[in-house]
Length: 131
Image (tube, rainbow, N blue to C red; front, side):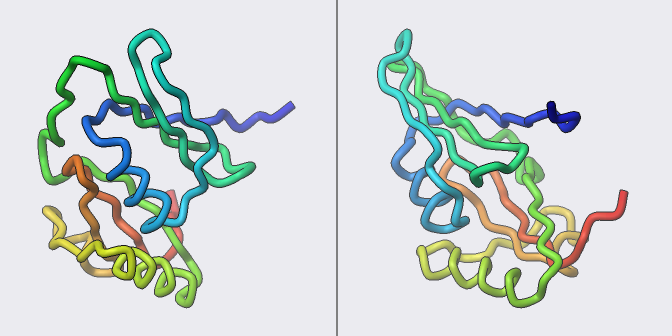
């Protein structure tokens, strides 16, 4: 029995194909599952096998989800190994995603920020989190 809870970040979107490209091809996450027309919702789930988190993006048929409310809605990935961090940044760029300036300049010191198709931002932070 695991004492670490599993975190699911669930978010509505209008374009699952664009999010799949961003999170799978750009960020390198694995497509864990997908579903269609589950009570009017389609969805994809992405993460890493065995990791205690995953992302669920859904589309509600006949409903517009809109975009991120601010430029500071972030998901931050701490990547301690410099070569792995560099490879992650290069994979995002090779998938066609250009870095954007962070709203909070703190994130530009040791990280690179990318904006997903819905306007939400991902920070690839070089280093470890010490909380």
